[in-house]
Amino acid sequence: MSPKFRQEDGFVFKIYSNEEERKHIHVVKAEYEAKFWLEPDIELAENYGFSTKDLKKITQIIEQYGNEFKQQFAAHIGKRLDD
Image (cartoon, rainbow, N blue to C red):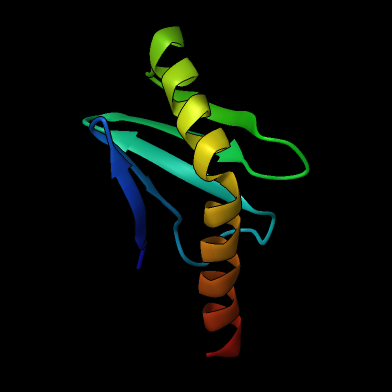
């Protein structure tokens, strides 16, 4: 299961279950996808197709909602680990 945390400007922000525990978020739009670390700093980990312009917009959204994404990630991972 990969819960959707937010959808904005066509970008879908989510995580995939059974992945590493370091806080991160995946961003998907059409056939493009990127992964950003949420800690210790917001940082692009992987990019599959997004333009520099898109990555800048995505980074701005993640900076705006970063704390919320971290909380949602922790809540989701906690549920998975408790199963």
